[in-house]
Length: 462
Image (spheres, helix red, strand yellow):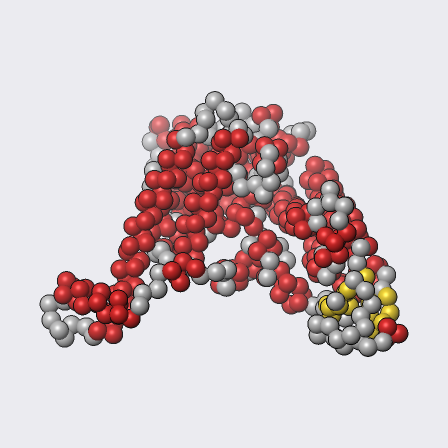
């Protein structure tokens, strides 16, 4: 079997001799074997539109927040997989007429108020939505009932607690799916997350979405930026469509707080930042509300004695975080400071706190943010190839089956490479730890692509 790939590359397990796919080759003398280097050269010239079509077809790529195709995950949502919920909820014409008569008797005082055709479609749809919206509270109750079963002594990574996290994850994904398929309303989804402390559970569960078992796989490579951008966290990104502005900021804060308290190495904690009891968030919200209505200088003059004290304390602590970001000799502390500053700058603006940001602050922040985003995208490529071709497998069939896909993956990697090289050209802003991680991921991807290509055969037509 042979396939014509973009870039005029013929991929197959043997020299094509008969019609196959969308090519016709009748004589093996018509084919020229391609070396791996030649395949890569041709892959680099594949049109970006062809690559985009390939990525759109694979949820692991289409749901990942991409630095190359920024709207990819939105396109995927528009043609979401499956619609079995809608199929199961279809109502027959006879049932619609019967329900319409009942509704007409209940809601109408006159035969002339509305036509039967309107009731048959619109009103039935309204009732159907209301019925499913009512199920949201039941799902929320199950979510919290599961949480009550957790073993407090076992820690986050005990087998029992990991299982509960996975079950809760299924509930979050189910609710998101119902919203995307228009089974429940936007209002119902918003109310689901407003019940009890559901946003807290969502922030914690966002970090417990591993594709592999084991506490180490859950623990490593987590941070408030990369984690939210991962393809399997797409349902948490959708929260920003339905929450109000304060709730959006609160979920971002909970993501940061969960990372700081449960996942970050204790040696890089930022000491006295008041994460407990949401003190940091509540303080920022208080002054954001006051200062957003008038100029900073005028708003500061209106503060009372206690508010001046609070403002001074929070400004002093954030200034200390900025100083650590610029001057700490430990990269882990610089990175920890970055996440806090990223949250404040993105949601409130550091200008509100009247702090000194130092030289090239925004450039340094943007540079580090780009590193995290690119690293997450590289890790997603690695994960996808490993899932399709397990490295411990000795079966060459796994490698051969990826022969066509890996050409497109190489094109994708090549586009990322241009962004990475541009990032690394800014030597004065080098971040050794993140640069090491990016280089490690690049080396692995290049080796894996080479390995998969070596098990495949590629040709071109004379």
